[in-house]
Amino acid sequence: MTTLRHAAQIAWRDIAIELRTRESLSTMLLLALMLLAIFAFGFQLRVGDMREVAPGVLWVSFAFTGMLGLSRSLTRDRNQGILEGLMLSPVDRGAIYAGKVLANLAAMLATEALILPLFQALFGVPVISAPLLLIAVLGSIGFVAIGTSLAAMTVNTRAREALLPVLLFPVTVPVLIAAVQATGALLEGEGWAAIVHWVRLLLAYDAIALISGYLTSESILEQ
Amino acid sequence: MIAQAGSLDVALEVHGLCKSFGRQQALRGVDLLVRDGERLAIFGPNGAGKTTLLRILAGLARPTSGQARLWGVDLRDQEGEGRRRIGLVSHGAFLYQDLTVAENLGYYGQLYATNRAERGRLNQRIAELIEWIEMDYYRDRLVRTLSRGMQQRVSLARAMVHDPALLLLDEPYAGLDPRAAALLDQMLERCSAAGQTMLFTSHDLERGARLAQRIAILHRGRIVHETTAEAWQGALTYERYTGAEPA
Image (cartoon, rainbow over all chains, first blue to last red):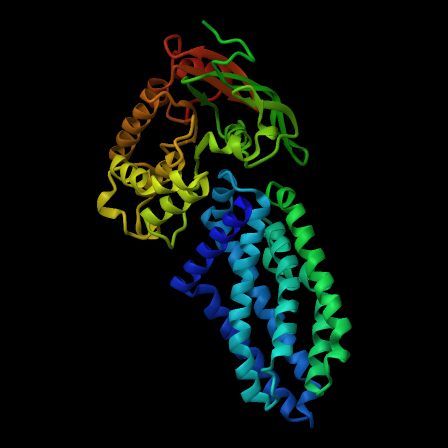
């Protein structure tokens, strides 16, 4: 119970600060806008059916903006000594990890909530539906769960901005493949049966990423 | 009378503490004994290992080898309970720059509170601390708008929010103007009068010696000399054991 309370307190504090400053959200949203605009202008010249490229464009936008959010969140904590302040307190290291995951996930989902209608308007592909939102949430959990651990590992290195994507994208390949395939199937109008194995893969990845992140949090934070 | 290792009036025992960063050895077998309620100053040149020692004692870093015991219990076995007994003031203020003074203290207080009753008393504790650091006027100001000296005062209040039994202070006077340093002196004297054990590092030999009861010199990762405040001969002793002039 205490671990959950601490995780909720840490997450809420990060979210409240983000709502006050809007530092990460504004840059994430700006990057999403730029990506969508580049993809829209680039593909509309050559692609006949936008549904063919829509899943890839959508998940590249999610992944890039998510990575930016992870990097900014941990860098801000490092610069202000927040992680050390939390580590001084009697808070379980796993609760710090869980709190950061919740806050980063909230930021990524908030950006995705803005990307989806924008994408629909620019590409003319209907992407706002309950099954697609489920895929977005499951994919984001896995991405953020691994990304938070890697961002904490790289935040004290000199080349952190370059190192995080180099480490993050290869290990999130299963999430991106499953999410893109499931999104594609849904946009093609296929039913639950066509995506159920991708959903299972995402659930398994999320569980492994969250458990391994929680268990390794002490070693990562005290490195 | 010198306390014996393992006895109840020993607050902190450190045995053979080593810490390496790659090939570089920051601590090379530190031994220390601090009695309950005692004020120990650690002096040493830059790179002597003072900050590393305090970071290990505060639980921010792991030693490569050796042992540290807090009131008889190994720091590694204490987990959260051990951290509840320690307050650290360091170079970094560990404060959220986009929260106000009161919000920062409230947040850290919530993390330290163990039950509903403690959380209920938190507002009163924060009001006391803000009055104590003479920051009433600034309680609702964002930390990022405060001067370095003011942030250091808030940092001390943060370290005190859970009323720790052992206060670790790493160069607490660094960057403070004379007024803020004098205020910090008063605050530390009050902590000492309240029976808190203190271990602090400083480059200011005169001020440090005035506050301390016992003094140790850390040089190249080892305690090379220990003495009482009465026997301390200032820069003369410092130079004899470090071969360097005080900073």
